[in-house]
Image 1 (tube, rainbow, N blue to C red):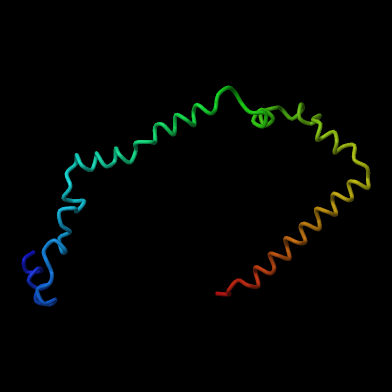
Image 2 (image 1 turned 30 degrees about the vertical axis):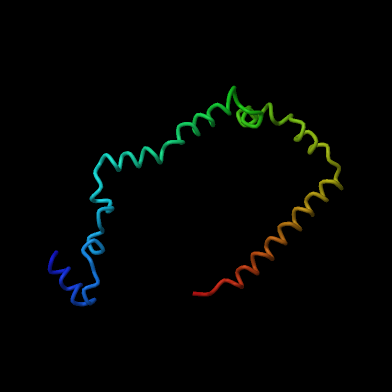
Length: 121
């Protein structure tokens, strides 16, 4: 260690002190276990309160969306949304499909532009 210190002093004209090389007294290695544990405990101070607050926010059973996911298919096939889609006229169905196709074509055009900008490797 002293050889390294002497080499640094001769190289930089004696302006280097030992603490700048070794890391000084604030080095993580030199801190004792108690101070490290104390620092960890300070960092975790608000974690328990935050988790308790989240748990308190959710009370009761499942939400309506969660309940719908658990229902069997036989019940959901007669849902209002499904029944409304069944009763669409031919013209309304065609409008829905053409709107969907327009959206897909726009997405494909964007994708093609993106692929052109991409660098070739």
